[in-house]
Image 1 (spheres, rainbow, N blue to C red):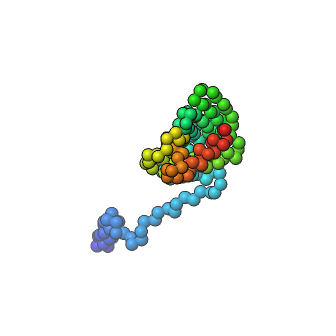
Image 2 (spheres, one colour; image 1 turned 60 degrees about the vertical axis):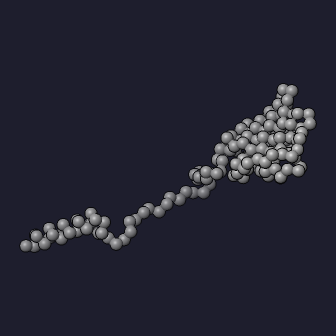
Image 3 (cartoon, rainbow, N blue to C red; image 1 turned 90 degrees about the vertical axis):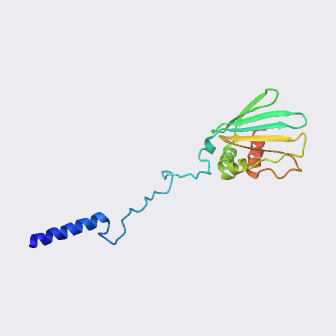
Length: 167
């Protein structure tokens, strides 16, 4: 009869374990991995940040104005730039280290993508400069009209930096 009791207890324990009622403790989950700080630490980008924006080509187009300008400045990720005017004249150069660092910070700022998502309002000005900025897949811009609403600040900062650095 002792063998029957052991078999019965074993069967009950086995059934209890299969039903998930064997213990009252919650299952153990391993703690999250921690990574060392520093250059070897992995980075996780949020969907709104542009992790590759600093590595993207930046293109600024200025059109309009009384004379009907049509200038394009293209900056490569390494800081080399070229400027082409409406007549086709081409100038080239390289951004200074400080200007390149500032450009990279500005184009990686999530505010730039947010500004690109805002609808543009019609302008009240004629013959004003229209600035179009493209950073990778992000496109933004504004018309430089004093009577319009203030231009998007991050976009304007990039425009001013590029015009000053490549002028």
